[in-house]
Image 1 (cartoon, rainbow, N blue to C red):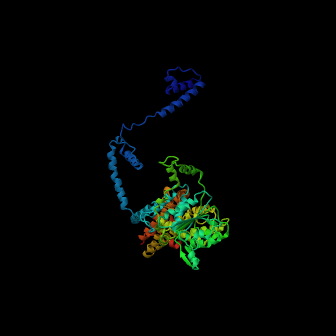
Image 2: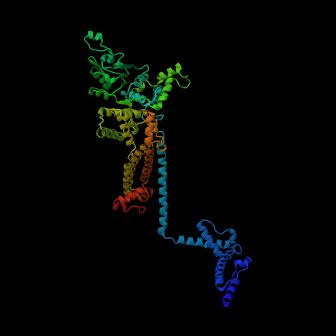
Image 3: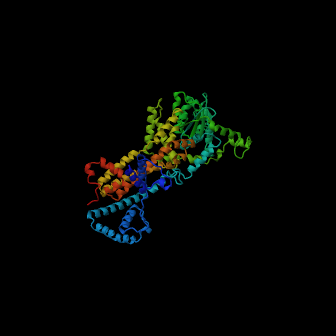
Length: 619
């Protein structure tokens, strides 16, 4: 027991005790109870001594040259110096003296580099130069195309169609003048002018009191002093004399059955016939000939009629089959509805005299509201004449537009219930109408956006107009042949790789790539403004009313933005291939320029064509 106690006292005297440092008296304990606290204190003191182990003073003595060199090398490799300048001391000189042997060893390794590695480095440099040259040339060619495609797409000062430079401005001014005093009749006013430019006729169909007669009478403002305006209201008891003029008494005395046509429909330039479907069989034959052939049988001779456009109005669709031929003579049709609830307040306020600068209820305000200033229409009969023939000579109809019309007719007659009949004559005249629309907009080709006008051409009942419009919008929202163009471009790339720098074959392939680039450039130009969602080709269209253009732009804008980005990517790739063919670039360089097409060529190309390519330049 004494030996155990003495050893415990010795250990306690050697190890620091927190109670002893604080000056507290330690309580006596038995041998069994005092051994366990002392062992705990010994372990804690040992752990505390290990944690406060003294550290070397780096500032006291400088590091050796080898340590400094190693630390500096590691720091430079990591991008930051970890040893401050103050701590290096005299070892900096040793580090600087150690550097020359390293550079010397690098020169020795470069001198000992094998020839194949040197040649590989030189070949990589040549490939990089060729790649940069092709890319810079592509950017030069791409910039003007994208700048032209990001324009407004509207009418230019010198229209590409060859139309007079001021024609578009005159049409806009005339449209604004004819719209004056009317609410929600933007579409009908534009169709009125378009029918006059096409030499066709317009039918306004709707309930009574929807300004159909007012719209028809406003067309007389374009006559000015050069034409004659004729207006008549038909009933079931109307006789031919009301339209074509009375019989000539002198002709009857000479046994000739002729009419005095002066001041009647055969001598009119612009005509408005209200309740046109009330015409009886005695009127129909002569009326059909005037509308379609512009001829009138007066006695034993057939005379030409100077009729530019006839506007017909009706409250109802034709009921008998004998009126179907007359119904088909009206190429343009519009269903005139009541003013919507949102615009009714504006209509009533305008008619009540709440106009800027006019007192409410004043006579001047009422006169201005009731009689819009149609005398300021800047168009005349001479502006309308010759437009249709000029459009047929100067405006092309792309195959995509032809396919759209053919597919639309098939959809209307085969997939709609009940089927919508569209005559061949109506389809032929609709193509002429699209040409006039493109000509007056200053374009030398019909755009697919012009086909939206077919919603006022290819319907038999008013409810079918929305069916036609929705089908056209859905067709316009398709991928516009992006997959087909990409397939053709992949084929050209494969043939270019197999050509392997042959000048004659590369030139032929370059011409094909140039034609493909022209197609892509035209499609990008048609989608001008889609990246910003503005679609100026729609909003600045002369013959699409602002509400119609806005609805179409909201539907097509996001879709066209995606399509345009895809077309720009294809155009860049097409230009890359074209420039590479022009420079007779080798296949392994084209693989770096167009890696996706190269991967497709490797996967799908014949092994005998793929195996020799992509290894290097020609020997």
